[in-house]
Amino acid sequence: MRTLLSFVLWMLLCCCCTTRAEIFTSISQMTDLIYTEQELVQSLRDYIKAEESKLDAVKSWAHKLDALTRVSTSDPEGYLAHPVNAYKLMKRLNTEWSELETLVLQNPSDGFISNMSIHRQFFPDEEDETGAAKALMRLQDTYQLDSEAFSRGKLPGMHSNILLTVDDCFDMGKTAYNDADYYHAVLWMQQALKQLDGGEESVATKPDILDYLSYSVYQMGDLPRAIELTRRLVAISPGHQRAGGNLRYFERLLSKELSERNQDYQPASEEPILLGTYRRPKDHLPEREKYEALCRGEGLQMNEARRSRLFCRYQDGKRNPRLLLKPMKEEDEWDSPHIVRYLEALSHQETEKIKELAKPRLARATVRDPKTGALTTANYRVSKSAWLEEVDDPVIARVNQRIEDITGLEVDTAELLQVANYGVGGQYEPHYDFSRKDEPDAFKRLGTGNRVATFLNYMSDVEAGGATVFPDFGAAIMPRKGTAVFWYNLFKSGEGDYRTRHAACPVLVGSKWVSNKWIHERGQEFRRPCGLREVD
Image (cartoon, rainbow, N blue to C red; front, side):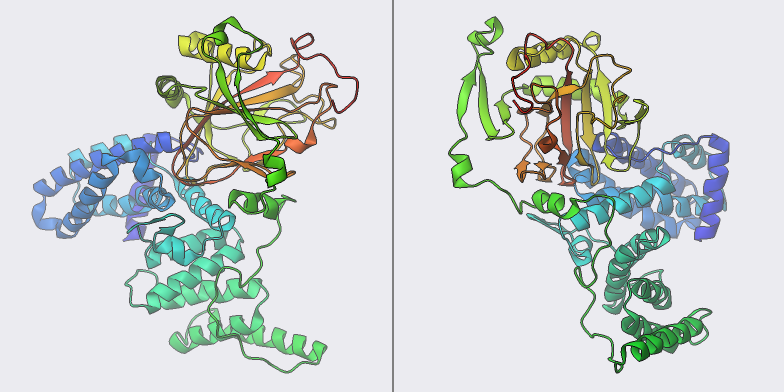
């Protein structure tokens, strides 16, 4: 059935003549898919009425989707706030709707196919589904969640009836396997096997799962367990094309290892494979463990002595006329480097207007290439963003003026207001906002010098995850709608403050909206004069 459906999807894609490689990294834009799916369900129901006698199987599918879309459309953003819902939406639209489409084409209905053809160009593709799967794995790693927790809807602080099936877990494992990510392949294939052994029905068979699992375990360096799993595979599928050869190869390797170490054979552990059974391979990020611990609320360096140095105050911008009658409420978040939070920095109306302006323009978030200064996408930044100018709406001019009044810094030379929405597992790994000495051309095109300071508006609350963390000194700042945080990236001497390396933790549950203003050096000569020392 999947082969036939894949052919139909290929035909539709040819008809649409549309190509794209955009990952759905924004919950805001993914809500459109909810309504698209709802419209497709209605189109499907119309088709069923026309060919009722031939579509008994399709009817049950339609009822399932009907119930699903009633839940999702009642609160699209809330529905997509759960990462499993977002993943399953990607999977449905990329894979399962395709199967249904092929069935329809066996005796086509012009109305249904026409509707599918129109919407198909906006469907997520294989890259999107893979991106959603990797987002779940990213959340799994950052928040130390085992596959069982995801599969059974048990996320920190919440429990839901959103479940992953055997086939969902199997497809997650295959995604990791195809990316040579054997660590996650083991976790998800093990979960698929556990649920299959528990009596769940699935398209994936036990030999399929054991085949992937045994080889992935071998790649993780656990030969005894790989041999035990391969023996199980041979026992239930003696004619399997790879199992026999793999078993002999694994046994020879193990025999050689034991001989070289002068050790006796020890049977494989009977303990189930869990999170922590194998060590996750190191990657490009040196402070990975520290960063992820802060995202979980671990390793925070806030103590009573430091807390005693934090205060709150009214900030009138050195008697700025616009702040005299209504000064800003300012709270210290950290003492050194000094990070402050402003309460009521944005009103609800301003937040909603900024979102409204940004939504049609959201595109995959970019970073500035340190060598060329050009904007480019990066795997370590997963969100969608838009840039807003003062000519777009008076609210942007008002927000820019407020930032200038609060900070006392010139914003005419600052970058445009950037709005970002973080979707499934959305994150921005540890980075500096300023350019370092080894990347002198990072902001050359702008002609306004380095980024002297960052003003970050939180435009939504986040149910779980999404903190802004500073691994160097162990701080974690939680998003609070309507508030903003501010810090200097450079010392008064113009030298970079390397302590300000920070990250946006993956969003576990919820939708995270932020907007930020990167303020540059040009124009600050008299507003923030140089200090007498390099680190003033």
